[in-house]
Image (tube, rainbow, N blue to C red):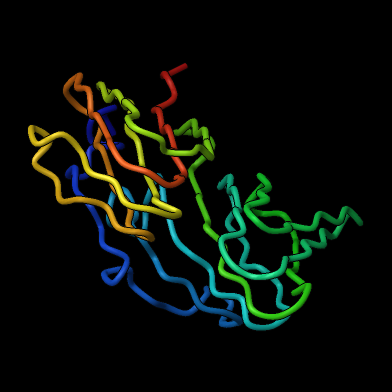
Length: 202
């Protein structure tokens, strides 16, 4: 898979009402899938929001790295088979861990919604940033480098030459790898900005 095709799904804005709601692989919870790249079972990157309504074991994803960010709720306690425990607390605690780890989630006090970034560790490098949006931010794509922007709060819009609709709270923009290009995002609020890059061949 070339660098461009690995992260080259079409640049677009995905409104929150278009996220696909589906059962977890183990049947113990629900996920609203934002996107997968490419859009096949052999995806390299997947973004979703987990709706956790009860204490439950997480599905196993061998070969995958994942990062979980608390979006809504009073907290989620992650209990690992090796005895490690990490509690995600509001407003937006997060944790990166291996997809094949045996882990269960315990609710601190009621339902949580959790942003879930997953990527294939042998093919992709990922960096997730939580940032305020005050005025303008700039994102640069190039061959082998893409960005996903999830608007946590507020409103935002890209420059007109991007030919993309504005972002409302909960929406996600996918800026595909390919031509070298600058995207200017303007608005107010806060966001998750995820830089994704194809690992160089060894």
